[in-house]
Image 1: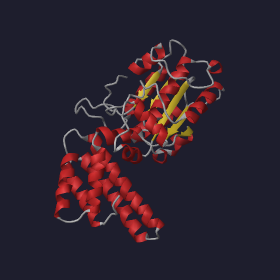
Image 2: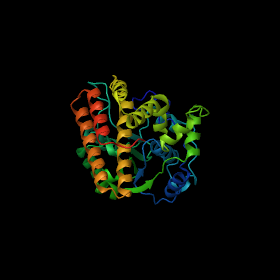
Image 3: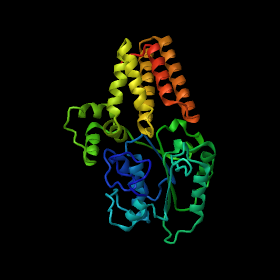
Length: 347
């Protein structure tokens, strides 16, 4: 797995190569102790929001297990991986015969990442386990994330989880565990990771080389909500400008706002701008749902229901636009029109 992976954000270190992890010491301790006891679960469901270090933790733990294949002889804590060690080099390059990383594949025809982890990808896990390890070491599969499994792929993973091979370990990542098949969740040991605390997020971004002394630093840290990936979108992809423009549109009135809506739609509909379009989609969805919750807490049930319906409508519109490759500018404008019509409160 090289640093030019197509799904790694600019400024980030691919999880397989990342030797630094911030903010999850308790989870690291739990995994080390569980493995060392010899009674560790064969499948661990690592839960938490996107961009907080779930994949880095999974590769870090995989490195620990493959470096110390006998649990009773393993250290009591996860050590910082040595990038010069054979195991680390094999994991980082994707050349390990004992580790399989299942994620959304690249479509050879379009050159873009597919929308789901397909059953063909999961079949790779079946072949992976059928091959005898030359070292007798563990076989580890990282599913990253399980949220992207389509139905057939999810059922195929479930079959392997139901009858796991000896010395096999599944590290199943999820941003939204409630959306997974209950049968998959029931066969995994849950390990919940929380968003990074402000100090941990600051340390993680500083480690990536970002200067957080500027005037926008606090805004980035607050808006990132404990996620390194969200912070990178804000800093490197124009997310902060998108957020500011969206807030101005919500608060504004008159003809000038229409021009601002078109400017924002032009930016979001630009070619090869998938990351920032996804950022905008999440920004809109999150803001509407917060407004719905606020209305519900205030006792305005009718208003809360309108916002909930608006959220569902926009989610459907975005899904259709992606499925049928519809004009993105028109999609963005229609979403902004709907939001203005519903008088969504400013951020």
